[in-house]
Image (cartoon, rainbow, N blue to C red; front, side, top):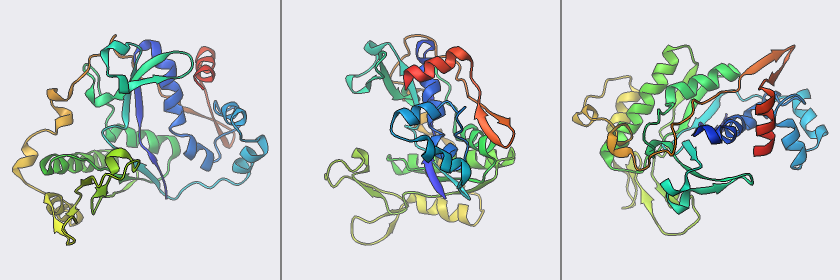
Amino acid sequence: MQTEDLAQVHSTPALRYQADFENLRRWLSFDLLCGHVTPEHLFWGYLTEHGASEAELQTWLDDPCPPDIMGLNHYLTSERFLDEGLNNYWECHVADNGRQRYADVEAVRVGNLKMTGVCSLLLQAWQRYNLPVAITEAHLNCTREEQVRWLSYVWNEARAAQEQGADVRAVTVWSLFGTFDWDSLLTRNADSYETGVFDVRSGQLRPTMLAKLVRHLAHNQPFEHPVLQSLGWWQRPGRVQFQPSTAPAQPRVLKAVKTGVKATYAAPHDQQQDLEYAA
């Protein structure tokens, strides 16, 4: 199993070139493993300009190593929104690609933006590679009620993708024992603890509300609880903290085009130039 973030980048029309670049780059590790990065791939030149030799890339074409299962990690921060209107956002959201400065913010916090969602993202992965997929991380640092709603949401989205033909093998309940300092991505030793299925702060395994849900899911039993009668915070109007400077662009997805036994990727000429510039 190879794991990678299951992401989607949205943007204003002015930054769609950057969103297109990042929406192709999110698949790059799997493209390499599956032997899809040919000289026609939009990232062949990017990789050779940033340290990879053509001989190294050729080894992946000669001897690909596709995973048995694509492990996909998804968080509420995995969908992003890019906006050139910096005054609409906080200073911590400012990014720079060398061409322009812009805000890079969690899409869930932006108004008038339709989230892609776990089901659609799983279907993208399945349709692109035709390999079994699994959700390998789906953690939420929040109240116990919201944690239950989040895991239930991810589970239902995975089942929906399965019903639409995707070979979804599993939803991994991560983090089982909670996490320390995950809110800083382990960059600070602050002893900040987030509970998971169990709370281990006392030195003993104390089941949380998530444990009841996990037990029911593992036995394929319905979980009926009043907490699931309410939407998660990411589905309620109060999630919005920012308004986009212009109407969000419709996302474009670069699709694989079969040419013989290899897969290359097609894009309009102007889009290829934008992708190269974004790199």
